[in-house]
Image (tube, rainbow, N blue to C red; front, side, top):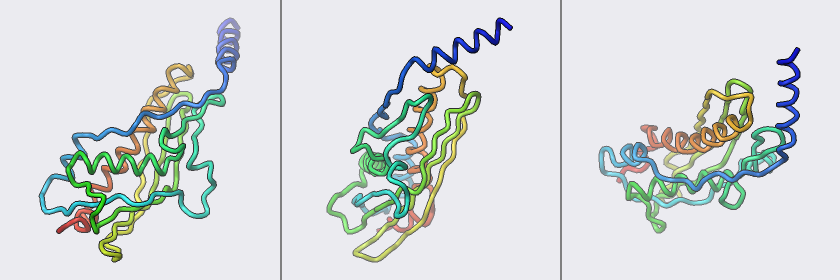
Amino acid sequence: MRLLAMAGVMVAASQLVGCASVKMGQPAASVDNAVKLRDGSGKAPVAVGAFALAAGKPASLDQSVGVRGGNTLASPIDNSFAQYLKETLRVELEAAQLLDPGAQTRITGTLVDSMLDPGMSTGKGRLEARFVVTHADTVKYDRSLAVESEWESSFVGAVAIPAAVQNYQLMYRNLVGQLFDDADFRKALAR
């Protein structure tokens, strides 16, 4: 009985924390993704074009995800997850010395899905986007890619929320890494 009372107090205390909007950290390049891009030279420099929410999707999908108890997570870049994905791609290409805003080869994208569930014992997330590579207005690559993630979570919000934020952010880097791993994408960047 005492344990039930303590659990009730903890739940009530977690509700008193209040609602807050947490911003993700700025995207940063990873060594792994830079190596993937620089592996096997012969890739042409590329520009990063427009990224937007996929047509027909609710605007809320691009604006925030629930973390726990009314807390939300949002992008620091124009409050848009599509723009966060674009910036993640841009910094990775820049780190690999393949970014050229004036290049004829251009990568554009649309955010198709964004989900975060911090869970009580296991957190889960999913991210999906469609990437299109064009060269002089000819489509060289057009594919939807998705990543899913699971991590150990907690009943305690002070543990679950930071873990959810960290893992959600990591999915953007992983999705871009999956793009770089795609043999057809690498062909589309070939000189």
